[in-house]
Image (tube, rainbow, N blue to C red; front, top):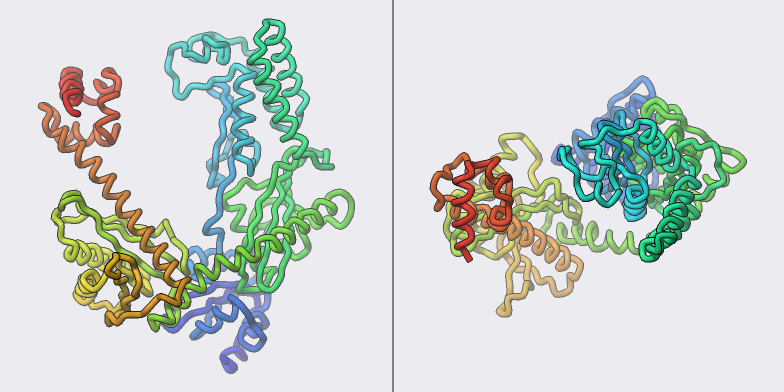
Length: 586
């Protein structure tokens, strides 16, 4: 396979792209030696997900670079551009909470989540905290012990927190700068690793409450102290240099890569991040790509402790941090512990991981076989929703390789406001694919309509108008209104009785598009009801109506709104008329 083409590939670094018969890039990789890497796919033995990818390759292409680091950057840029089906670039990754200290204009402490490193510039951030509950509880405790500013905005008047002694009244009082500096130093010292400051502060508060016979609050603080001690005990590690570092190691078995990251902050182990990947390329390439992608969305520590399989030169250059390979001592012990956790995670999760693949990827492949679609990847599904012909909408959900891709979901507000399911389906389908054609974006491999022959005919009528030949399938219900039969492109029935995984996949897609369409319909209906009510109040025209809709979004919120708040949007006399009118409604 590709014998002659492989002879022409140079022994140079670069990025390669695997392309299917439709001209779509399905995988992007990089290599120190393009010739050796590409030979490994087509002249060597491949299994699992790699074999599946290779079976789809019609041809390959490549771009030579000067260095391996340049090939790394090119690979990342191409993955972002083409979003290939066999590349996993933290698509389902989550962000972790941080504790953020804000000193100006007034001292505040809060839990924040960041998805971009740029958002943290010039802010004092501590974390990440994999346990969000622990982060919130620590912030709440510090707020109880220290009179920080707790209300949002700048109200210019004393609030409840001031009267109960939990705020210094920053909005109106001239404050003692020395007192503020002492408080700030205590808080930052604790967040940087000095546990004794907070524990002593809690004990001092408990003694004061006990002496004042306020035993209930003293007990509450005692419970908080016990909780904090448990959290701090779990975080203890044998490093005392207070350097912020992450420790990364992995375990690889039969095409599955388990990655484990430990977060060490100020000498404490705050927790970790783990993931399991079904690999396509080499273990080392997948590991390096994952590490780089991870730190595009997370705080970068001062240094990384890694195994020697991590590309030190490229990561240091691209991430701007120090990469170390510990070979002995306590750091090596922590690296080994990270490896042990990665191994345990894979051994524990591999069966559920394989089961999830069976329910999603394998079921998706089987559906492609049943419908004679060789390489089924993207399925787009439509469903309509209306109430007696009013507030008509359609929803579209997208599943890729058997899993929902929520960033690709779309909503359609129908131009026809009547109970006409056929023409609603026609309109939604036409609008969707007219836009994709106009923007020259990729079309799906399959359209699945939540219905039978009627909905399929409506869909195909719109596709014919656009000159498209995308396969369409639907579901036929039995006399008990239970889904039983799959209808293919020619509306032939395919019995799903012995196709449990396919049936469950189609049911998940069906439930998801129904939920999505219904939720959008409720949203539109709520706004439509509110808009129609506002039309009945004098002196509320389109401009004021839009402002009210944008600000409140529901009748109940307007009805319960403070009159002074409403008067900021509409004249006070109109606000009074509106509230009086709403009170008359049941």
